Amino acid sequence: MRVSVLVRPKPGILDPQGEAVEASLRHLGFSVEEARVGRLVDLEVEAGSETDAREQVERMCAELLANPLIESYEIELGGNRAER
Amino acid sequence: MRVSVLVRPKPGILDPQGEAVEASLRHLGFSVEEARVGRLVDLEVEAGSETDAREQVERMCAELLANPLIESYEIELGGNRAER
Image (cartoon, rainbow over all chains, first blue to last red; front, side):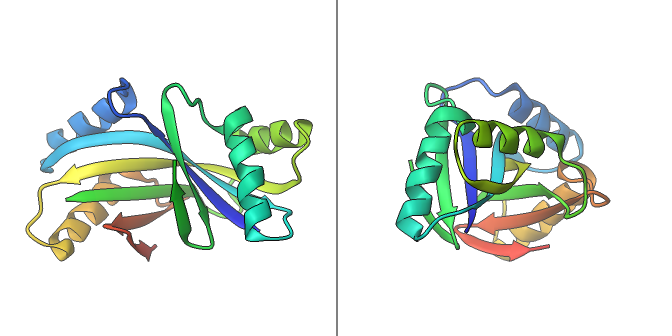
């Protein structure tokens, strides 16, 4: 099953990459008020059901894909998102 | 207007970060067939309409956010996606 995980720096957490992107976009003439940069992880997971896939990916996020202290994540199965 | 840009390595393009994530997930006991790692850019764009915002972000992707030779991108405005 195809799953996408969107990992974002939490609000208030410093994001130097986002600041650099924002500065570069402004320098290029774009009207951008804020830019934040996160990671996108696309996975092909062996799972019997959507519930099973979601549970597995929640554990993957907790163990490897995201740092819960500074990052939030969103899991997307076939276009459906669950914010965390 | 809030816009999210999902940048992914194109199929066939080497993705060492994805390979590392895949190996680590397997090592942790997860049944993952493939993992690919991309970037997620959240932007707050000054735009008069969704069309205007999308046009601006298309230009941002072409000029800074994505490398069209090796990356594809998806633009999401208020939950609606347009694949490229």
